[in-house]
Each structure stands twice: as structure tokens, then as C-alpha cells.
Image (cartoon, rainbow, N blue to C red; front, side, top):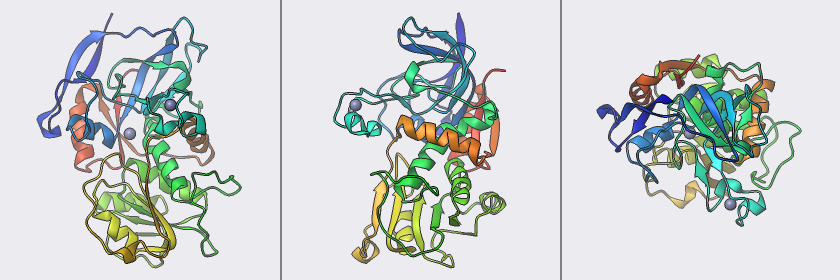
Length: 352
Ligand SMILES: [Zn+2]
Ligand SMILES: [Zn+2]
């Protein structure tokens, strides 16, 4: 049985439409895998870095896509579940070994043999995908399949970036990954640099957690969306919000954001860098980091991060702003993401 997929044969600029529509065999689930009939797949900035060759590709041809929402339609012979008919989400984290020193210390996001959806294995720009049974997540009925897609990476990475930047919910226990810095009393003051799929989800979580929020972005429609979602201050990188920031997250893949963000960071503040790829960080004076400021990157996520974010999505509740594209227009969706033409998140609508 054939299926339609948008496949990458060779990396090229998004303007050169690197993905081509192919008919390929519907994949069969391995022993511990399940097969998913895909309904939607979000278009992440990482997909752009893949197709344009910013990231080394472990295999070609490749079907990208790691924000999958679909219905389980077949179980491998040893897969314990989820049952057929269950609506599930599939994120970037596709498989971890469970045995290396990172896996054994609660840091499977750094696993030495880690695999990623739509990168190490074929992903969601297709009608079907297979995934290890333990790495897909039943979705609440209250989530719309199209609007839920960006939660799977933009949401999960945003959530992890918040925690790595020292932001956490009331009553939540601090884990070792969180910043242990003490800060001035009052609401935590959070800065978000770049306002796309991930930041617009982060902002909603941060407000739910009673943070005071500053959003730095250039595009008018992103400024409007940030104001509409309740940001306390909206401006551009390099402009001064009315208060210094305890925590900041850089979503834009531009290294020159780093000194700009550090300049606005209060003493002992933390800046988290959420992207998988960033242009070089310019040389900067030590003063910007002095006073116990921290800069750290965010790499992948754990299964617990995914579960936590999906629970929060219902609790907040998180509403994503999406622009739908049919599967065959994946190249157009990538271009829109590249040039920040989408209001927030782009999602491929695959099946009914
Ligand atoms: Zn491992
Ligand atoms: Zn992603």
C-alpha cells in the first residue's frame, strides 16, 4: 500500500523547494513500534535547519517532521500499547538507550545513542509513521489535533527552556536541572527573544505561573500577538524594558541576541538558548556575565518533559495560533517559517 510523503533527497535553500512529493510504501511497525495514521504535523525551525543543511544529516532520503499528531492504527507484535484508535502525539525525542550514563542519571535528552523523529528516522511529513511504543503520548480529548501539533516540539522545548532559565510553577518541586539562583522578591521577570511558535506557548505558561513578561520581536504581527496574549511589555532586542530581567530565553537563532539579552539580565539571572542551531556569538565583555549570570543551552527533552507539557496544555489551557498548509505545500510552509511570515506556528494538515 503506498502513501504520500514530502521527502528530502538533498539539502538546499528553502527557496529552491528541497522537498518533493513521493509515493512510498506505508511503513510496517517493528516488534516494539506502533504505526500512526497522521492527521497533522507541525513545521519546526529545526526542519528548516535540516533541509537547508545547517545540521549534518544522518540519512538521506529523509522525511522530516517531529510535531506529529495522529491515530494509532497498528501495533507491532510486542508493543504493549497505546491501543489502536488512540490519538497520540510524537515529539523530537524518538528513542533513547536507557543504559548510558546520561540515561541512567535522568538525563536521557543527552543520551549517547539518542534518535530523533524526522531526523534519525522518517518523520511526519507523510500519511503514516512508525514510532517506538514508549515514545508516543496519548492526547487529551480537549486538544484539537491541528492546534496540538506545535505543542510537541515548540511547546516541549519552550517548557524545558523555561525550567532551565529558572522559571517554574507555583508549588512545583525544583529539580537539579533548574537554576538554584536566589532572586529579588516579587514576580519573576522573564524576557522572551524572538516570538514564534515556541515563545507564544512559553508566554502563556509564564503568565499562568504569574511571571512578569517582556517580549522582544521585530515583526508587527508578532508584537500584536504578544500583546494579545498578555505580555506586560513588547519591544525589540536592544530596547530597554521597564525592569531588569531575572530569566530570559533566546528563541531566535541569531548569536548577536546573546550580548543584548545579557545586558538586560539582572545579577544572578539566567539566559537559556533554546535553538538547536545559532549563528556565532560575538565577542563580548566579561562584565555582561559577571555578577553570577548564567548562559546555558537547551538540548532536546526527556519523556517527562513531554508528559509535563501535555498536562500543562490542558491545565493552562494553552491555545496555539496555527496556519494550516496541505501536506504537498510543505515547501511553502518552510519558507513561511524561514521568513517569519507565519503569525506563530505552521502546521501541515495531512489526513481527516
Ligand atoms: Zn542513553
Ligand atoms: Zn522542533
